[in-house]
Image 1 (cartoon, rainbow, N blue to C red):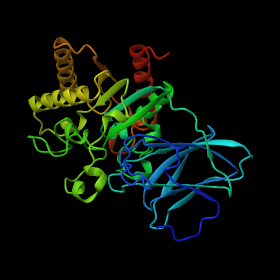
Image 2 (tube, rainbow, N blue to C red):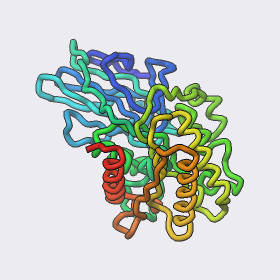
Image 3 (cartoon, one colour):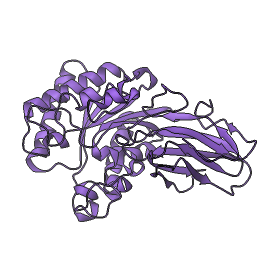
Image 4 (tube, helix red, strand yellow):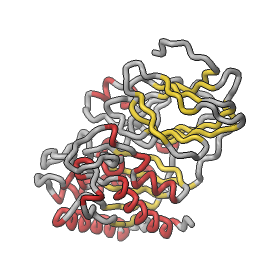
Length: 357
């Protein structure tokens, strides 16, 4: 709870001028909740200052005011519920873009509103882009470790930043919305270092159906919004990009037949919920050698099988593997330079595929 008085006009999350993107639960409309990265909150306001209210320990956001350089905002402490986003702005209309920068599966973030200058209100926000992309993925899509400096250093929320992920960059390049269903360690049939038989309680074909990610099955019982089945009518993407398989193949205890079945199961599910979308299976950029060749072969086979069965809108694209220490972030993940390379490759492919020029 907020324990200090707030000077100014408090804007509730239910204000109709606020735009939201991403898998957000509005079960409690005064406390929008989520835990996938890339969720965005967009608003236009009048006045000279802006503060944001969130649940303490919600984690990290990226904020951008009027198209200026984005900056990171932290809600890390037990009493961190209010953060200043802007002061001393010139009088007039201003626009704020907020993006959730990390995975919130341990934080369960909530947005609680804005504080404006006394007597000021929100005004009509800019329209969302009409182009729509959905990214389904793992830590690479999340942006795990991409602000890290060494591959030998391990995970830290402070070095994960989805804003600089390939997915987010592609969306900005193509002037598109992007919604994200991604979690570090998740696979198409087997999560990182899982049993050879797979993780049927928590792999992507299960999690894709829900508003949020329950990394432990018991969490779905404890957190209301994790039990919420996603309403797919809320977002129908033009193209869905699936980047999975790295965790399935990252340790030697895998079963190629089960992985192939996992890809097929996920494709069936994605097509069921997105009947008009183009679907692109990706690889990149943390697989090498025989595992990379296996992933490519399985995805080629699943894609060819789907097209032969009549689904002509399933495609394949391979982003280049990481090549050199200059492109590693933490735990051998892509850093922001590798993310930019991947984004350049995928942007060019999607621009042609979607005719988005």
